[in-house]
Length: 213
Ligand code: DX5
Ligand code: ZN
Picture 1 (spheres, rainbow, N blue to C red):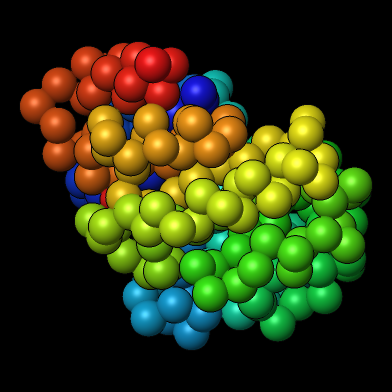
Picture 2: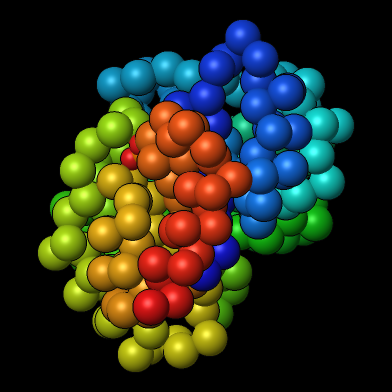
């Protein structure tokens, strides 16, 4: 299981240092949650902030766009140094155009489904996607409880395309990561359980160990 700490739970006044700290703690990817106050009822940061912290690690930047118009901002996030750009099937942008723009810019495109959206919604795009993000909470806030009933979506997606990377995001801790791993998840995003841990490096090790059980 790859672990992608979500900086949403970090100290924003030290964002660059927090990114570097996660690298040193053994994070596989750095997960950056971009929210526009429209697609979700919360605001975080945009491409200039992603660009500002890009130099603090060489680990892949996994940018999760929770915004109404991802296509409009793809060039900015490519320029900011995003390696993986995830956008929502429920957004207003055309999925084909958006994933093509991401791929043409040299990044890996991923699509995400909110809890209320069936996995089948991304079926038409599976051959052109590097990953599908199955949200395990309603997007917008950290610290929510994992929705175990989302695991069926992972099984449906893996049955359709076994080599597709599946990411889970929301409420991941030592118990829930096992559930996600058993369902077939490959990448886990975790905010609270890593950043609020006394020893984040140990927390990442423990999450990996729990997923392997
Ligand atoms: C929620 C974000 C998540 C969030 C997860 O909309 O997409 O990445 O940071 O936070 P935890 O791990 O605290 O549930
Ligand atoms: Zn996220």
